[in-house]
Image 1: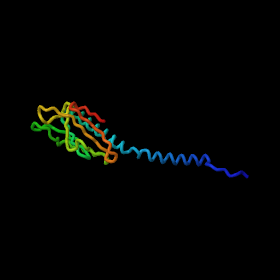
Image 2 (image 1 turned 180 degrees about the vertical axis):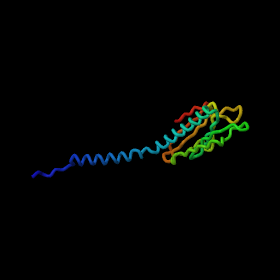
Image 3 (image 1 turned 90 degrees about the horizontal axis):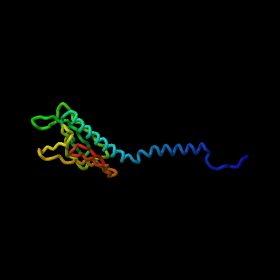
Image 4 (image 1 turned 45 degrees about the vertical axis):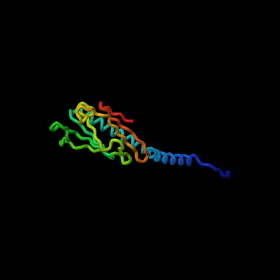
Length: 157
């Protein structure tokens, strides 16, 4: 008869390590979901602005981006009576932000790209100014800024 042995067998140890691994795999994506949400929302916004700018140069028309606190709109414009107005042949593209992300700086304003891909100034003789859009994660209070320069360049930070 053998004496009593204490400790874990190899099979028991592997089962425990497997359970711990599964729990860690479930918990890891949840730990940085807020940062991913803010970064992915910023990246998507930058991409939509770049597409609007590219469309304005490629199609020879103006595109306007209107910012709201929890969504933004991209609108194709047409020249009518000497002014750039909504083109009724195209619908306004509305993109909602992640539920945790809001636009703090820039909400309530709009900016427009002309047919050369430059920011358009509605006031003749006055150059367009840089537009800064600040996105904020409401849970972590982190912010990301997207700058649109008068040259049409888009910089995210």
